[in-house]
Length: 583
Image 1 (cartoon, helix red, strand yellow):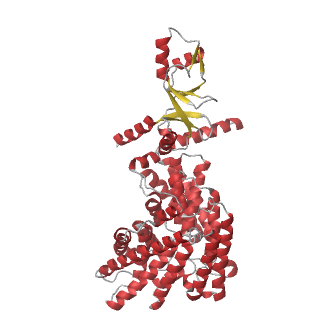
Image 2 (cartoon, one colour; image 1 turned 60 degrees about the horizontal axis):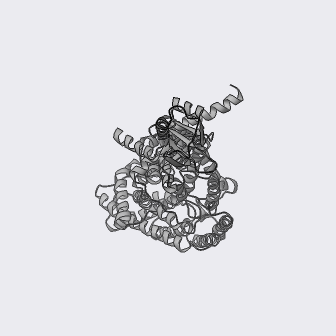
């Protein structure tokens, strides 16, 4: 095959793939792409995890043991880190400052899943600085952003339709969580429950494959050990389930307080210059670290200590209050990082406090470490409004199957208390609103249209014509009539003419073939048209029709730039009715 033939063949094959992926029931190609996305996300997450351990390898500084370093360094590191991040972000444009889970949600809701690769790079570096310098943030938020960007980048390189890119963003997210924490199932559940807020078979299969492939990549480097060292502990008595219900409700109240504190601080400092609030957050975190060094960093070493029963009494309460304060300060000021890691630590500490209190007041045969595990799941579930994600995450993080039944009870009690009894707003969605971004869950019809590319509904029987139509051109049109004629003029907006109307007009007005026809002068219905990329979804097409007040759009290939077809409002409605009837 010659180079020229290859240049022609490759775009055609990609365009055929694009057309097939525009349908929601095509699983095999998406499954393959999901597998590839998982490998890419897994490799990137391995690099990210290796980046986070290099201070320990080079300088002997353990990012999980800030209590072992000198007091002056505990004050200096967060202050320098906050100052450096503030200086850098102050120099960035507002668009480049957007990182984290809420950036991914915004891109999925308003930008068809198109995540800029530059923001992902900024996220990686900024999160590394945050964690290196001891700020109380997690690594899962950056992991979600980076993994989602990997999926979006792959979809953009292949110029897939927006509905397919959304699936690959979800694949990248699931793969990143799976590779970062060795939790493939939690990666899948979190993506479906928090990011997509929907379940479809076409999306579920590639997301699972992405999580599996990413986990395989990570385990080939780091092994399959769980994140937390958990002893063989289990529920001592079924009567303790009553205590677990109460503990879940109290954790729900704690999650509600945590969310409201974080949102309040975020609103209060929103008008302060970013370098000032990040520097202040770093200094305050360092100051807190002088007295409560365990509040610095992610805090997984503290979780292990609680699970093993190494912390007791007033120490747990001090660490709990210190961790809440440090996390609210860092995240409220906009320090780049995740919220899930700190919520797991807060949940473990709160669960430990509850376990010791129950043992002191009523006596229990269930170990305190077991209550700490349940507290982790309950706090994560109530904070993110993701009960299933919280339960599966804990199951995979601890490798302890004994937590399933009591975990379901604790998670349910915590979620009901926080989200329903106390009407706590969604953390991620409220953070979006503080930034002036409205996020609304789509209605069922809009969700369906979002899963379909325009290629599924457009009419490809279209022909481009000039304003003046010659007799020969008309004869060729009459011999093989397309559905639409697209009249493109440099002087006016493109117009769509229904070919059947033109043929009827000529039959009634002419005895033979006309010499010429002025398509702008004859009495025909002409629909004003706007261009639309072949990557768009039916929902995007409908929104553009409403915004531009037109009834038709002509579809342009994202690969070759040629006109592929035309889509009308009736075509979109017909697609939905057909799918509904076929069910």
